[in-house]
Length: 585
Ligand code: ATP
Ligand code: MG
Image: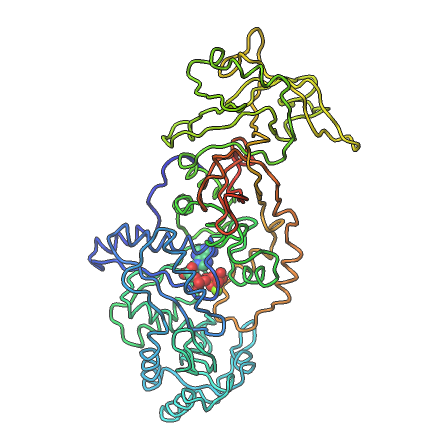
C-alpha cells in the first residue's frame, strides 16, 4: 500500500491501446452486465469501475445492461437499486438502460437459425439424464437420443417449447457441438429452457428463457461491445462465447477478457449469501451499514470517491487473492480526511463537575491567549473553533459548562503501565479546545464503578500552556447541559474469520437452479460475528446535531461518522461509524 496516486495501467488497458493502435477498433464500447437478482456489492464496484473507467479513459461508451434471463430470481426492485447504485458511484451509462430481455425476439430467431444450420437440437431427456450423460470425471458421455433428429423435428419441438406444450424440465434446446469436448461447457450446452415464470420486463410473453451463456455473448454482439470484461470463472465459457457469436454470423464479434474477481477478507461477495443474511434477519436489510453492498456502504458513510480510489489502487489483473480489508479503509479515510468537519462526541459519558467553573471563566477575557475566540453568555463559555484544521469549512461554537462529560476510558483508578490519560496519580490533562483540567476526586457507586469526577480548571490555560509544569495528553469532552443525546453505532465485520468456505462460495452462481439454502444458513450461523454492532448512548456537541442526513464528520479521537440516512433526526441524532481514525496495525 502506498500513498502514490494510483497508476492507470493494467493488462486490459494495454490490450485496448494495442487494438486502437492496430486499427482493430476506433471506438471502445464496454458494458456492466448485472443480473437483477440482488443488490450490488463491493465486487461489482470493481467491475463497474473497470468497465466505466475503461470507456472513460478512451472516450468510449459503457452500457448498463441487465442480464435478466432468470425471471424467478429477479425483481424490479433490484433493477432500481442497481441503477441507483451505479449513478451514486459517479458513473453515467451511455444511452438508455438495456436489458437482455429486450433482445428475446432476436435471440429466439437466432436459435431457429442455429437449428436450421444443424447447430442446435431439442433434447427431451430429463434434467438428471442430461447431467448424467454429460460424462466427465472419468465417465464417458452419452449422446441424447434426440441429438440427430431432423431439422424439421427440432423446429417443431422448439415451436412446441415456445407454445407451452412442454412442462418445465421436459425439453431444452441445446447447442450441438461436441459431447466429448475436453471443456465441459462445450458438451452441447443448454441454450433455452422452459420456465413458466412471470418476467419483470416481458411479463407473461415467454415460457422459454435463454440461458445466460447464450444470451450474454449475443447481447454483447448486438450492442457492438468491443471488450467484454468479466471475471476469471468465465474463462472456460469463452470457447462457447466465441462459438455462438460465430455461428450466428457476427464478423466483428466482441472479445471476452477475464480478470480476477475481488475477494476481501471477512467480506461476503456473493449476492446469494448476502440475500440469505437479509432473509435470515441477521441484518436490518440490504442497506444495513454492515453489509458490503453499495447500499450498505453508502448508508455506512463510505464516500463514492473512496470506493473508486480503492478499485483504482487495486488494479486489474488475473492474480487471485484475498485483499486486506484495511486497504478499503485506507481509501475511505483518504476521501474523508479533507472533506469532513470535526466535532467532539463522547461515546461513554462520565460526568465531570468543575468546582471552580464560575470563578475560573469569569476572567477568561484577560487570561486567555490572544488568538482564542470565546464569549461568556449566561454561565456558558462559548468557544469558537474552525470546523476543520486546514480546510475552510467555517466555525462552530462549543459550549463549555460547569458540568461536562469525558469518556469513561479516559480515567482509570488503577491505570495500566504506559497509560497516558487521567488517573488519581496523573491528574492533569488538556481538555481539547479548552482549559487544563485537574481531577481532585472521584465518586464511585456501590459496585465500585467511577460515576463522577470532581475537578478544577486552571484559569490561565485557555489556549495557554500551564506555568511551571508540563501537562501531557489531550482529551475530548462535551457539555453535560448543552450537549445533545445521540445514538452512535460502531461496527465490526459481520464475519468472524475467513476459511475455505468463504472462497468456495465466490464461484459463479449463474444459472444455478439447485442452491442449498440450508447449507448457506448453517454456514452463516457458524461464521457470524456476534460483536458486529455496538450501540452507544452518546452525547455530542451541538454543531454535530444541527446537520443534514448523510453529512459526515470526524468525531475527534473516535473516528469518522455519518448522520444515518434512515434514523437520524436533529432531536435524536443517530450516527454510524464509517471508519476508525487509524488502522489496526
Ligand atoms: P454474485 O455471485 O454476487 O451474484 P455475479 O457475478 O453472479 O455475482 P452479476 O450480477 O452477474 O453477479 O455480475 C455483474 C458483473 O459483475 C459480472 O461481469 C461479474 O463478473 C462482476 N462481478 C461480480 N462479482 C465480482 C467480484 N467479486 N469482483 C469483480 N467483479 C465481479
Ligand atoms: Mg450471481
